[in-house]
Amino acid sequence: MNNPDASRFAESRAVVVTGGASGIGKAIADAFTASGDRVAVLDRSGMAGTIAVDVSDEASVRAAFAAARSELGTIDVLVNSAGLLTESPLEDMTLAMWNETIAVDLTGVFLCCREVVGAMRQQRWGRIINIASQLAIKGGTGLSHYSAAKAGVVALSKALALETAADNVLVNSIAPGPIETPLVDGISEEWKAAKRAGLPLLRFGLPAEVAPTALLLASDPGGNLYVGQTLGPNSGDVMP
Image 1: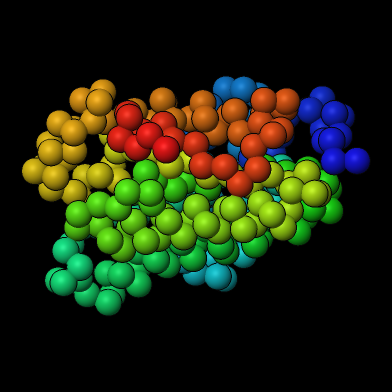
Image 2: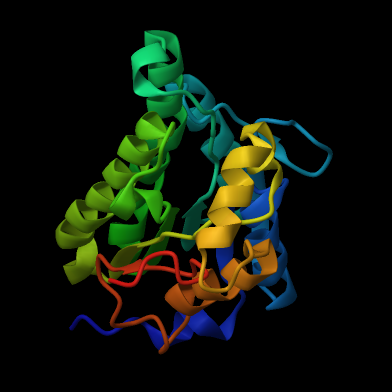
């Protein structure tokens, strides 16, 4: 039987959100909390009420997830929202900038998924939601490293979904368009102005407009048929 155990929904779910102290991650963590779920926020900032983590570091990830399990008892839903965004033309990009982006935005997703997927398969229920970007599909000027990392997140999500779906562990990604978050603070105003002008909605999105997509993917029965999908709240920037 591949149907989820309905008894799991009699109680609140245990949710881990990485990068959950700001931006999209915080909006998602707040949305799960508002829905009655128990939420552990993992974030590099080490802010009060969060579990400190560097998602690019294997030992840090292992320790943070051990702390999350100690707090929650189990992990039913993982949202990988931790991310890094910098800007440079490829010809000027240093290897250090490339490696840092890949380490945080792609390797970090791998490390966090690896921490939960075994236990989710054993309990025969789980949801993994990876935050990608519409740039994974269309690319972005000055953002080749970020685009490549986020394309990797989409591909990783699809591959992992194939490995785990039979055990009721559903893996999907969300590919937002540009969103008004601290993540885009390091991007030039010229880039952002040009981007806004090219969007059908003529504006960036808000974190609260992305969070409901995560709730959908984690819901029962609403999320039960999403396997390896990429959902795009992107202001019309990409229309697959």
